[in-house]
Image (cartoon, rainbow, N blue to C red; front, side):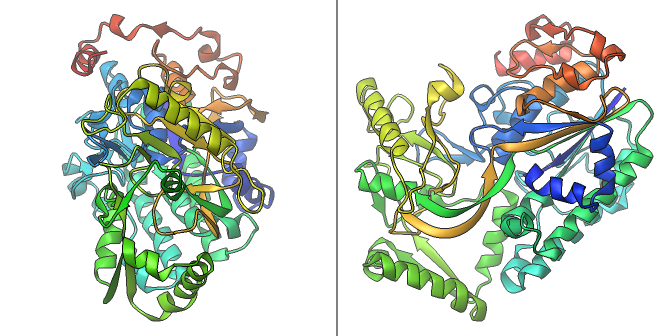
Length: 535
């Protein structure tokens, strides 16, 4: 028995269904018609790092401890990128290895550094440093790996038009596929994983157009993806099965809410002329972008006081930003640095990384060495106040900013690994932004971003044909894959085996899932994992 798992990062049926119905993805349609499909619910927040880690562990972020691309250390000024050493429970590759199974992992986020040295592994955009192919001897064995890139060349994005950048992403993915095919055919494996990152990258660039059937350049990607599925159908081993999934879905928003600016207005946050922890250098792609921006001939820095002076009226800010995007950026090699940060010595609540997610941290002395919220009574009062106000807040156009604000116990249980976020804002119609590049709290702007409704499809010898599944959860995949391979499922898993995907006549469907306390496993290798992480 072999399991092939293909990730389509950020994929949604909003894009796939028109393509399937229109005949643009005939190979994937064959898989869907001959298998099962359904919505796959993501993590909160629905973002790459926590979501793919949940896939790999079968638990929510409150158990695996990777809440975002980066997490705070002893203080909210001390952020570091997460890596595989931060995962608090065994990963699927460690469990497979403990049972003598073999795996190939290509582009699985948060797989750096590799957990199992023996498995051929190409790590993801979360890699630190220049080495991402393990073992390095694979490069000599497969010359195609010499052209493998972790991320796009961001200089193309800054110096050429959008179509050229999109074509570059497609070319990058085609070169990756050449390497993937070699590993698929010539390595020994029971579990094969490969993730298409390009489906997410291009959706960030053009989702609103693609979902309307526009932007033919971006739509070319799906022919490349479909060709790969066609090749897979021809070369998949007998008695093997294919799982296809995304870590989250995608949508587009027309309104933004600047949550840190709102917290500043509420008296919970104080800004300063220091970027500090708002800098984002946690991914290889971000580092590539920073390198490309550094080549800009003209760089302007705007600090807190200058920002306040220039944008003394909300209408002026809107006009200036529109003029900069539509005119200035197109004719001048210019980059603007907004040098405004958060003063953590005076801030009680913030989204400290400053980008785009919906989680908030309380600067609580119990969690952070320099915390200024001193006791549980004040902590609970702050959480209740923010939750109540945000759930009652509407944009000027009448849209709810957040449908629900989750507290830490609602999301992660009573004792998640620290430091964990304290509040999470579930969004539907408004994208919540953390950075401080606006004086206005609300802004009208098209933004292609994530939502929680991903995709799941399965096809193969053991899979039912032509079935629509009830909604599944990302944490269901690890237990299902282990069960499908005849292995026990750890009892700490938050997911369940998706029994209803299997043909009733197969052995896998007839076997009751073996839910086993992980401490009771006899395999020495897995026990060492448990001892090392202190389960």
